Length: 249
View 1: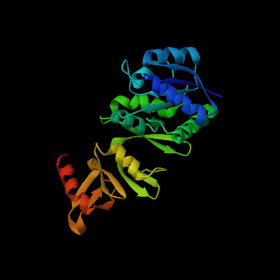
View 2: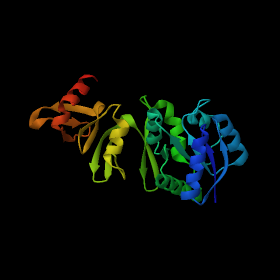
View 3: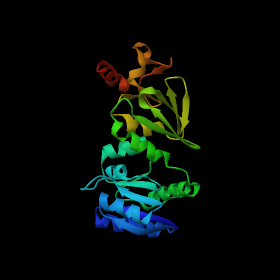
View 4: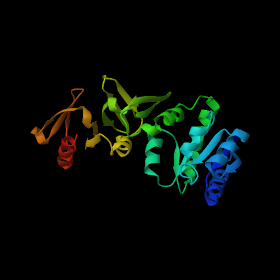
């Protein structure tokens, strides 16, 4: 059995999650529940859970703040959140598991299965460690993105990514130094994650870093030359927005 702890300030939320776990995840035992960040810290120290379900938004301190107060994090973590877009962005950057409220039973089972694999492998939670270092830097030049691969995660600086190129259900990430990293996620995941920053989707198959555009060419309907010498066509629908974004740099 996996010993788990639920931290959520809403009684109905705690009860609902516990019921879903009993129904969809019989290998998970809820050993305790906490209703605040402070009580969550106390419960973690007392019960030493293997898996923690942590609500992002709580009135007396966020789940993120609670994590920063812990001396060590030796458990798997699944975030639960309703609508905090900044929180979701931070979680996605680090490739951590999260559940949107109201929680879906099948999605819960998938997240728990991943956590169980990590618990059995007894590997340190590199994604969580990366998240804690990166959370306050999301809008800075030193922000990092976690790129998942078969054996783990590769953390790269956003500023060093030249572009993302779609390849079916996979995405090729082209770095400034020429390295190409293939990740098993579609390009739309990164488009949604990065659309508020310096990245721009110029075409269905290409998401580019505007800071690495070398040249914009009007010929052939519009094209951009990137730092890695790639020439990328610009969708007609995106042409006007792209020119505007480039002029604002």
